[in-house]
Amino acid sequence: MLQFFKNPNYDIVGKRRFTFILSMVIILAGIVSLFVQGLNYGVDFAGGAKMQIKFNKTISAEELRARFSENGLGNPEIKSSGENEYMITINAEDSEDSDEILDQTLSGLDYSLLQVDKVGPKIGSEMRSNSVKAIGIALILILIYITVRFELKFAIGAVIALAHDVMVTLAIFSFLQWEFSIPVLAAFLTIVGYSLNDTIVVYDRIRENIKIHKGKPLSEVINLSINQSLSRTIITSLTTFLVVFVLALFGGQVLFGFSIAMLIGVIVGTYSSMYVAAPILIAWSHKFKEKDEKKK
Image (cartoon, rainbow, N blue to C red; front, side, top):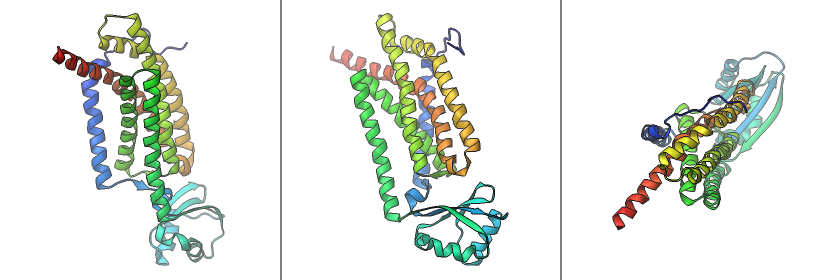
């Protein structure tokens, strides 16, 4: 098997206080950003109409914006999605009249309407609510699964790590005001599954080493386990990262949100499986050890 590291012996657990603080700072900053500026919801969640249009002659986004402005039709979002091809997003109030708006604005131009997505504001609100429920249900099911397969303390660590991944990715989307759409939500659920797989690999090694190295401090066993699975983790993460990176470069505007969320998720998920999920086991054991000592 290809190995990036031969007999690695990094003190990953020893850096847990720093990494916990770093994660908390990012998450708290993200929560503040979510309250202050929120997420930049796409048509799927905010309501409106999104149209993909192909023009048969060269036209710039600036010319299209000028046409909307001249007709008093506001300032819709216009993004290039290919050569002489644009994604035009109209807000929820005007979405019902999108056909009329297009006819009025693009009069005299030779164009083809490739795709139209219309969502009412009420449906958009329901989809936002359902997306939160979907992620919440996924985390609860994962908690049950890890508890059955391992122990409750492992399940708590895994769920905290997964929630960490979702919150950090949400924070970045809020900071940079990238559009949050259905494909991005799909990426978030994929991140949960990807990160969980990585965490389970580390947990399996920890469980094996606890039996093999009886009497060793838990921190040493966890450090050993993470180092033993490090090459496998890096190879898996790197191959996934490269594929998604190519998708982000060449997938166009339509797939940008999904691919960039996946890129962040791969990095954050790899980080959390080593620096969040595993070290939480130490915090858990210390907590209950102190309780046992107090009872004595």
